[in-house]
Length: 459
Image (tube, rainbow, N blue to C red):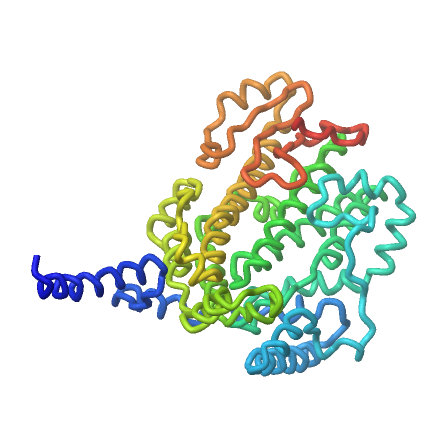
């Protein structure tokens, strides 16, 4: 082969090799028309979800404020937050994300917000009645100290959606609702122990109605998760209370409605996931968060490149395919789980070097993405078992097993096979996203008349 031909071949092959290397490293940033249209669709702001937004009240729940004061402070807070996010100094942005607080702080008395009080029923606890029974006097004292939260919980009934006004850059905005929600649950438990089971049931059903409505109309995944947690906690406590009543009355129509199985529309989390995607496209300030000493110069180049290519097309495609597609609407209709391939979003070695942020984000998102849908399937299973428990309890004990075997099988039992223990009078099914408990244990009304502690489900 002549030298001239060798040079010609080299000139032809070199650009192809360079392009292949650039693609392997994820350096090519061209987008197809379909990808550009997808990103544009994902970046559209949240459409109106209702007429009265509960998010400002949630954000300022520690303070006793009028509607006018809430509007004043949320307007100031949003303006201050957006000004801080626009700062060119990444150290200022980092500090804001770690320490941002409302302009109401220090101007009004605030209620405590804390974890770990043993006699408060936080939404994730599975033994609310037992916790309060340990020392009812302490529980009453704590609820009295936190009583300012109760009218604010009731006030939420007048709102119909929870849209985050801080967007699109929301990393660092945190709602701390644990004590706020736990006060309502503990108040209901105390009412039951004091003999006012009807009042306790009324409070729980009102709480559940509020959070069922808000979580279905939000663009904030944390509000969605809090709503699911609050619905499960209210339902669990409601079931435990009815299990201790020798002659549990029929549920009110309000409770029947709020504890009915989920509608298809309540499974739709596309709006919240799109908002989460928009937040993920904001500059992540990797250098400021990791610290200069935490990154080598080559890593800095990779982070810098990610900042220059912020559309995160891989994440956009993942969100769209998983939560906003016709395939997901079919999953909702059939109550099927989300299946994401183990290697989805897997980065090459070159992409990990040149796009470390993008790789970490896509892989982390894909690894946990199905949990949000699975949590809704778990919630629907809680609701289905509650309804089944109420219907079985209306039958003589000897007829319950046959009725259970002859029941119509709902779609949710494809992911949550149900077992009935006629001796303990409980229904059980495994959880897809187990946290404090591996399975749902749903007692029938009247099955624990003595008020004994609920047995822990088997591991």
